[in-house]
Every structure is written in C-alpha cells, then in structure tokens.
Length: 312
Image 1 (cartoon, rainbow, N blue to C red):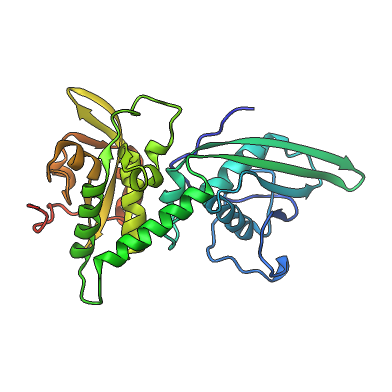
Image 2 (spheres, rainbow, N blue to C red; image 1 turned 90 degrees about the vertical axis):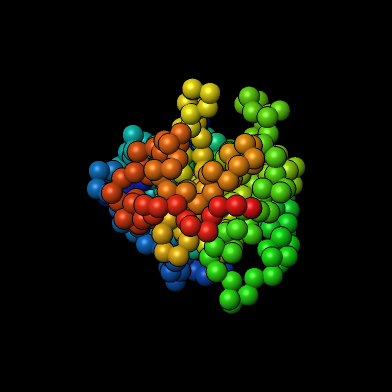
C-alpha cells in the first residue's frame, strides 16, 4: 500500500459500464431523492459507470471537510474492475477537491492534505462483484483544530467591521494586515518533514508560525470568508540564487487577479509582493497549470500591479 498524492490538475470524469456507487453519508434524504450541488462531466476510458457520481463526490468532499479518518466507497459490478480502482478513486478525489462556493473546501482542503492511502477488496458471487474501497486521507489538521480555526477566523472578521460599503481592496488589506501582524515565518520547523502544522491555517492562526503554504491557506480561507475570490498557486521561487517550492495566492480585486505573497512580505518585511502583476514577480515561477489558457480564462491576471497596494 502506497500513499497516493493529491494531484493538482483535473480534467473531466466519466465512469463507464457498471451500476451505481455510493459513499458513506449523513444525509437524511433517501439516496434516490438527493440532488448534488455540483455536476461533473466525466471521461470515458474507465470500466466503471456510476449513475450517481455527483452524489458520491459530494459525500467524499463532506467527509474530507469533517476530517473523517476513513471514507468507504462501495459498488457492484458484473465485471472485474480492479485495474481501474486507482484511477477511479483519483478521479473522485480530484472532483471532491475542486473549487466550490464554500471557503473551507477547494484549495483549503487540497493544501492541508498529504495525499491518501487506499485499501480495496471484493466479493464475488453469482450476481457479480461487490467492491469495497476505503480511502484514508492524510490530513495535516484534525477536526478539533479546524473548529478552533473557524472560531478564530470568525472573531477576526467581526473585528474588521466590514459593511456594505467596504471595497474589495479594503477587505484584502484588512486580511493581509491581520496575517502580517499575527503570523511569523516558521524557520524552526522549515526542514522538519514530519511536522505538518507548519503548512496549515491552524499553525498560522493558532500557533502563529507557518511556512508559505500555511500563510496561503489562511489567506485563502479568510479572504473567501470575506467574499473575495482567490486561489492558491504553487511553483518555485528564487532564494539566494536557488529555486525551491513555493506557494502564494492570487486575489481578485475589482474584477482582476493579482499575486499576493503574504509569507514573503512578512519574512522580508516588505510590500513588494502585495497585489502585484506577474511581470513584477520576477523571482516567482508558477507551475504550468496556472499559466494555461483554461486557468487564465477563469482567473484573468492583471497586467499591472494594483495602484493602491503600496505603502503600509
């Protein structure tokens, strides 16, 4: 059994050829009466067909949000699908981690996980195969820690006293200033691969120390709670002549997206990475997926830095 990574790119999904699939869920609504909030198109190269794939994806997403330790998916089939199970679960997980309208889903989930383990088995009888698949996510934070985060974020946002006249810039500025004032760059744990809280909103907000990923996740969650569209982007950054993995945010202000790297602003005590255009981040290099035509069509980057973004 090996740890499956959480892939950052996802195309479309389809599952071709079998009966319905179901995942453990808490919904009181009967399975055949439930309507999923989101629909996902599907691909055609797998041997498994799910008539209720949208419901299953929603159940997996909800389980991830609750930090459920194991997620069981089961289905019946008239044929042997063992060769496609890894692909199947990979597709379901990618859909479950896609962007939604909820601040604690999408990138907030994706970047606080270290992949997942997978167990699967089947029983065969005269009617076919009954498969049981168990997904065991490797969370960086647990349910109790996330409750603390949610409470602390609610208190912080209330202190901002936003009203209907508050602008996008004012909201971004308030969140950024809060994070800048309350989170330090976690130099102590930077090379400790076993300490995952450095990459979480919990580490940033409660312990007040985080690496770039923790800064980015906290910014994402707080900005989206304030109604500001944003994403976490990854790539590399040049430090002392060497490139290393890096994560930061793109943030929507007045209809366009800007780069915002709160961790570097805090670490270097500068505003050089606050609401900048790509051209002015010469030492940041985005992964290819964030430079694709499809991504940029959905998240159009400004060609100029935000004019109100200089000076504290």
